Length: 219
Length: 219
DNA sequence: CTCTTTCTGTTGTAAAAACAACTGATTTGT
DNA sequence: ACAAATCAGTTGTTTTTACAACAGAAAGAG
Image (cartoon, rainbow over all chains, first blue to last red; front, side, top):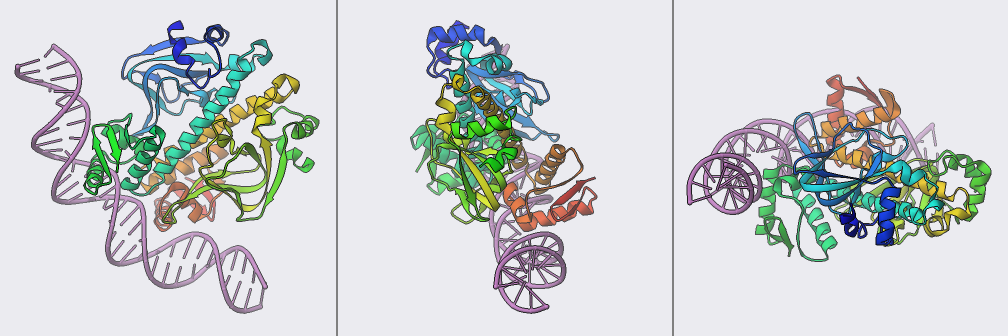
């Protein structure tokens, strides 16, 4: 577990907490570590969950498959990110989506009851962590709203422009790589892969973008 | 302000806090009240915001208009709901969407700094409120994910089924009213109104649903 | 290195949605 | 109560997407 302190201290949740204090808190908060091979499920739709999770290393997708086998990728989780907090509230409901490892990953579980119900005065940084979690989930909320912004565009081209513009912004650069391959990007934007591939090429022909694999450049 | 205590005490944020304590906290938290006529903007895209807002009475929509005049309704706010918390984090960014009153409304503003940075020990319920806010924003996050679920459906019919099923669930009844008229529902689901109207009627003809104005019944 | 699998781009067709234009019903304002 | 504005439904046309099937390139396994 200690090997991940360097990762944890760079996360939003532990922002402002020192190494030694993080180690103390890992036991104070009842942290457990689980590892997953590529393709394994971290969470499954319908499960009960009373933990908040942090990705220590690897790469996860939040996704959902419907009756007909259509897959939607609802989100992308990178190291240091918190997830699962949505299901950890008192009126806890079942997990809505699958969370799957797209590469070998390590996840830290925190017992939400210990985080939220222990008297904050007991541990000097407990209060700070709750506040940090609040801001982290706010940030996440913001990203969901942005994704809704892409999804609400009517045409594939508009969705792509909306998504790529945001990624460019986020990287502060016209050139950037995305965490998806073509099929995954199509699933993320909820469009057909071949139609999207087609549209990407048209956009390139129109001089809007350049790309190679998952590297893109806006022109 | 006191007239809204009965509303506030039923909100998630003040869950578990007594009337007198709410009154005390309203000043402790630097609460301010603003009123809006139907059609007025509560928040505008691009604004800076350092408050958390609670709708005391009325009905708001979170919406966004693009270049071409297409409107997306990203969310719906009912009395007692918190909003704006996304923009209140320390690395505060500009407001992403408009929030507009769809009927005469009253909104309470809380200074986020006072909520988050005052020592929680100072006020017995301060900690409770921070925790409540955490759960409230989690719940909101959940709803955003559900909306993404509707939006990720490919056809208008699937989007409608997804949305109506969720509303039915939420009301624990096959019969329920929705907070949108047809145009607003179309904007919410990001589809064309006339096409949606058409699809609703087909669904009725297929024996899937009944409806009258904004009352729906699933069969 | 070779075989297999995955990934990306291409094309044609069928299905669905967007758009535009119009009607009648309902609501709102004066 | 009446005129104006908003709202919901209908239809036909155009545009866009989904789907299916395939081919070449790249990546991965043995």
